Every structure is written in C-alpha cells, then in structure tokens.
Image (tube, rainbow, N blue to C red):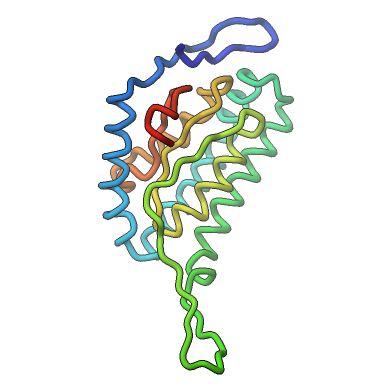
Length: 192
C-alpha cells in the first residue's frame, strides 16, 4: 500500500509515495552498511560541521518546513515553526557537544585500570511517529549520527512528506548516505 500525504482539513491527497519492495529495502540496508564504514571513520570535527549545517538548513527553511507540517498534519503554523526551531537547536546541540560526551573517560577502580569508551553500532533503524516529524527525527538523528552511526528511517505513513527535507539534506555528497528513507509497512520481511 503506498504512503499518502493527505491534507487533514480537506482530505486532498497531496502526494503519494510507492511502498518499497523487499529488494529496495535490502539495497537500502546494504548501502547504509557501506556508508557506516565511511561515516564512522570521519573525525568528530567533520561530522560536527555536517550535522551543524543540518541545523542551519532547518532554520533557513523554517517557513517551508512549517507550512509542510501544517499542510500534512493540520498542526497550527506557530507550533510547526516552534518544532522546526527546536529541531534545529537539537541538531546544533549534538554537533557542538557530542565529542565531549563521547570522549573516553578513565574510571576509578580498585581492580586496576578501567576506561569507559563509546563506539558506533552501525546501521540503526528508526521507526518515526507521526506527531512531531522534525523533532522526533532530530532527537534520534543528532546523537546517533554524531556517534558515527547511520540510520534507516521508516516514516510514519501519515506524514511522509514532512520527512523528505531532512532526507534531501542527508543525501548531499558531504554525507555518505547516512540517512535513508524507507516507505514500507512490512519491515518484518527484513526481520527488523
């Protein structure tokens, strides 16, 4: 069943997105796995510039993004603008702070030397809810991308268009395919 962006005030179908096939989903996973190796190898300073730029783009595109969320969800425009601002702040926060959060730390131990270290996991699947399309994505993407992980995004069927601006940003050449959208209601086919 295709994903449909529907204006809740009028019932008008704004856009339709075909559901991904199993093959497309496996290809997305393979692409994300390859991207993980390149992304995780980048130093924090590079990741920070890219994630910080995503925050700037959110601010620059605030009106467009807010209108899109309002049109697709029926959310009041002031609330949509606030969500975009909050999302930009989250992305910038993690761009600025993640390296400090993830720096290895020496632990006091009577048993010998001990350290706390953080390593990226790899490809993470994010199943996004419908109610805060920018905020929920920012709070997932910011820390995980800065940690060196990459993400596959399964969008809520009711708000597929609101997620596209972030997907377009992460599809830029500076990002090695760190975020891939998935339009499927059958994630179980992949065992995910």
